[in-house]
Image (cartoon, rainbow, N blue to C red):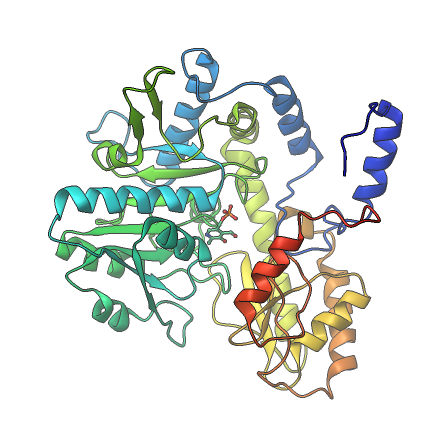
Length: 447
Ligand SMILES: Cc1ncc(COP(=O)(O)O)c(C=O)c1O
């Protein structure tokens, strides 16, 4: 495909954009239960306006863009406060950086851990991290990129990491123990105080992945809900990832990686002093940094304030309770374990829940499929308050439709984020890689 010789008019473009967008899932109508965290038109307006104003700015130039330096520092300071960091002025206070997403935050935490261990524990030649199997694949990816060995730990019946097996997985080469608050598949929080104390006892690091919960759990606690401790208030927790572009409701491309101390964060940075282009330093993985996303996050946090987040968390938890009660009331369906916030898995021991997701698709609901074992998945947002009743009605009807299809462990999982099931399960890694490879290819017919 070639660049068009002449540009299109704005009208032509707008028309085509509308046509293309119409092919997407109806996320604004609450038909999808993953990928999008929509918190209202007013929020979208604040984000959009700020983003437009800061469109061309670059967070790599903190002296050129003093405003961005202030915004990032304030976003980080507010996040530290939410995550139980010592009060401002107390030394050594928690500190961090904004990144482009949960994966980059996790990558940075692991990079710091690896380089810290090289410095502080030079006897370790092959560093290892101990990670629950429910933790996000970003850990696997980061471990792969950074040549760190990932040691997976099973979960128990309560869908939280098995602590005895976590303890047993720690060796002389372990540099970091990981817990999720909460994990993506089940929405359960691992026992962070126990994991952190294992790490503390050995003088190693403990990362809490709170990409999902970092901007949700603190407000739940303020609403008086029972939230287990998962943050810097827990001795031994050294780093936390918390995503602004999930329950922080900011634009895609925004997360935070937080450190208990600035000493550890130093291992995250990169510098090069002899480059002909000048002295080069960069705090995170990207070079240029999206100033618009930094500014939009700052604007949104100031727009919503504690009150705005509390309102949204309350409404989301009301919807979550309604959905849990409604799902459990449908014969044969069960919510798995005890989810700690607005993320959950449900399935059936009687009938095939993948058939249920297909039956829901006919009713225009996109339900994500979990595997090992088979379940379906909900990430509940403020946007789902208005559709929960209809969803439950359709779920009841769809369950009756597939009730005669027995539950089996065989069947077609779906590629995460693609919502499409796969038929040939003989070599899943090749299949996933082929799928990703195909995504950026334009076919002859332009599709
Ligand atoms: C618990 C958890 N950690 C990390 C990530 C990765 O975040 P991102 O997709 O922003 O890289 C996710 C994404 O869903 C998540 O749920």
